Image (cartoon, rainbow, N blue to C red):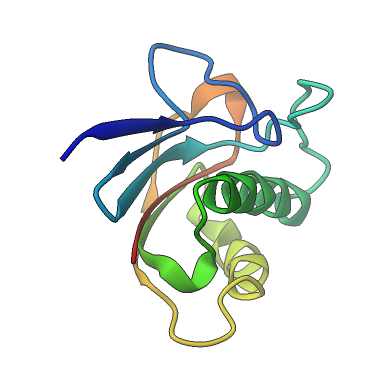
Length: 126
């Protein structure tokens, strides 16, 4: 199998030496996304709900570019600066997974790129 790099201008460009996503066979590995607006390049940090929505929209753009959807997501990792925001993040996140949600862990961290409050990565497969 060959590794294929996935890139879309509908999601933020990588801010380091990594790809938005890598497709390997039918497995799509998406790098962690922060609430960076792909058009303005600015961080969305009005509320934790707005941040989470921007992260999920970034992930959606990458999924769609690769020919996938949220129904193909097998696993997610959520990184939070403050576990007290778990409920609000969970409410927004849940709007993208109406049925059969993926496996997941949520981890509180000491810091995230660009002072984001939430970062989410995904693994999807067909």
